[in-house]
Length: 132
Image (cartoon, rainbow, N blue to C red; front, side, top):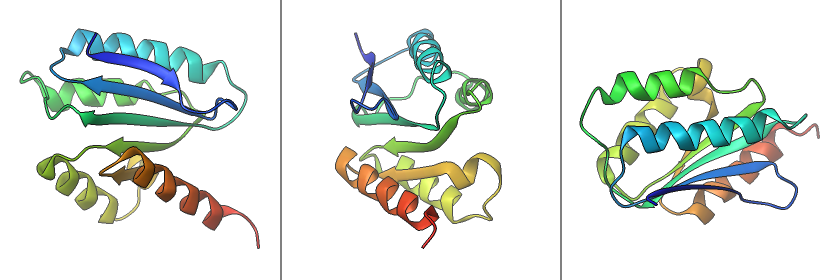
């Protein structure tokens, strides 16, 4: 199966959508249903990771419309959204978004080349939110 879902941590504060190889939008929709159901069941802020380190593929067919529909259905308790990819174009696009004026979803985006890099950025962002 090219897309799987799993909790990243035992505290269930980080949920991963793991993308491996070639996939189709129906599979991404099923992964989102599983992720959103799991996240919605929590009474805490939960972060979502799109881990595409093993896939540089995006199906060609209304990509922006389909992605917007999926993102628009996110539960209210989703915290940060981490996008992990080593695809240059995708990283440049995400990095450009994160440097734009921080509004809505954009201020929740964190990107990284590796899962560890993205998780370290999340840790730093969370630490900067904590009262000193």
